[in-house]
Length: 364
Image (cartoon, rainbow, N blue to C red):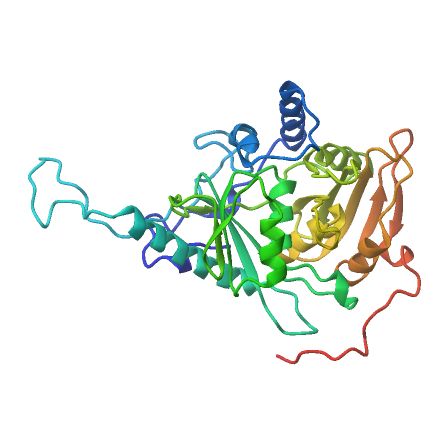
């Protein structure tokens, strides 16, 4: 998602934020798991927002600036401000204007609203035409996006908030400080956030939820991608198995990891993310596929799934229905730790699947 449209001026517009990807995926997941072990706790216990700060700072989807992993510096955008005089002489033309915390708050939340509107443009809504976007603002000013992803089986539709929230879990970035929607919060979305009692959300507007009255300036967009070679089923299974450490499963204690590869070579992680409202639980496969829609990564070629506590596990019926609609020509590879992964076409997962071909369609 380009942030340029949210500002009038960019300080360095030639740089490409799409290069900000995590490069050592297996190490990323291993480090996070080690952090949980050092805490001496179950990673599936009820979480607190402060618990994620230390791991997020070291297990980020954004490579450290100046590192070999970052070939280009992500675009950093700033409103136009007069610089402070080097001589220290005060004057209306040399003094930096005072920006109050309240002014900064309103500026930053306005930017988030515009970014959420941009995210809505990626929505897959052939049945209702009701586009919706949501963005998460992280503590370092990074931004994640999500959009509404519909399904012919209406109850399997993934809302924009669920989409972006599950994406954040999949890349291990739970250092969240605000979330904005392109539409007024529905009662269900507000309840989704309020159920996370440990986070302490407040709602300064009808489309914004924050954890603090002081917000960082939205600076760069994270591309939730991994790098690696998943051209072989075995390597895809290994990466999916590692990604499962990012799953949030306090209800089931059944972590699942998914790695999806697109025709253009994008590698997108997904994990199952549970919630006290079981209707809002999202599986690893649907997590990754909805992220691909939100970021317009294109057609899917391979889906690697690992149920780490069930060597013979396979996708649930809901995921099969979503795969049939969003990735009909893909191959699915199921992790089998003691033998080679089992592969099959998506079409074979759900014979006689519901196509929705006779449903009312929204004409744009």
